[in-house]
Amino acid sequence: MAYKVKNAVIMAAGLSSRFAPLSYEKPKALITVKGEVLIERQIRQLKEAGIHDIAIVTGYKKEKFEYLKEKCQVTLIENPEYATRNNNGSIYSAREWIGNTYVCSADNYFPENPFESEVEGSYYSVLYADGETNEWCVTEDETGRITDVKVGGKNSWYMMGHTFWAEPFSKRFLEILEAEYNKPETRNKLWEDIYIEHIEELSMKTRKYNQDEIYEFDSLDELREFDENYKTNSGSEILKKISDELQIKEEEIYHLVPAKDENGLVTGVKFEIQGKQFEYDYQLQKLIHGGKIDE
Image 1 (cartoon, rainbow, N blue to C red):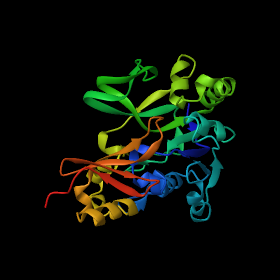
Image 2 (cartoon, rainbow, N blue to C red; image 1 turned 135 degrees about the vertical axis):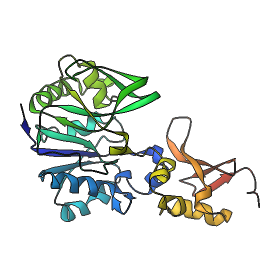
Image 3 (cartoon, one colour; image 1 turned 90 degrees about the vertical axis):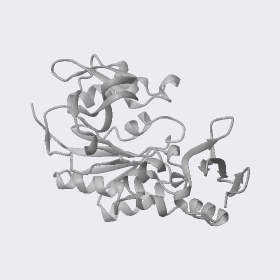
Image 4 (cartoon, rainbow, N blue to C red; image 1 turned 30 degrees about the horizontal axis):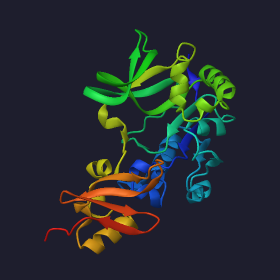
């Protein structure tokens, strides 16, 4: 049975702390990749597939998405709990929208348009890992229906990219979410965790793609591999300040990861230069390092 796609919900509420320090300065969805803003590209591709009813779920730095209402004619939905619970909060915030719906992440980059106006049924995009992977690996039956999901695996298909929720899947998932939403243990769950816990009653198949058809950038280092402009000029005021202070080129700053305090709260960004460890504190706006850069 083919389902006519009703709309799309793009989740863009999260902090994306692993994408330090760019995500401290702007939401990851609003970075420019190969000349186009990530979320604007995804909106354009959806509209080219005939899907014009698009909602963006915002939270972190929500005001920076306001321009999209006029520029791209989209609806903004606020997730007020973006900082205190996992992405099930974004699904809950958009629950009135979800029917025959593409449910997407704002930080995916698709070289070719993956969207369609009609879809055979609910699916999760998957890529193939040749060798070991720490991604969410799927087991499927002979029809392609996902029967199990495990974190980590070898020579396996794993979840990556957009999903489509057909009406029967949406209806049952939202019933489950409503029933479990206020339980303390639900707060830290991804929507995928809830799906996996109820996988026997939530039918979803795989949609298989090649590695070069879906990209997700978890760090600035990964983005640099895809878009070389980020090696020399990331547009980050923090990285510019660091490079100016140390009198180095931005491309010499690498292995960037968020710095956290004892409570797990992000306080800045750690990185390496010439094999030496450094840290920049966001609140102090101060560079912390243990030695001089080699001449």
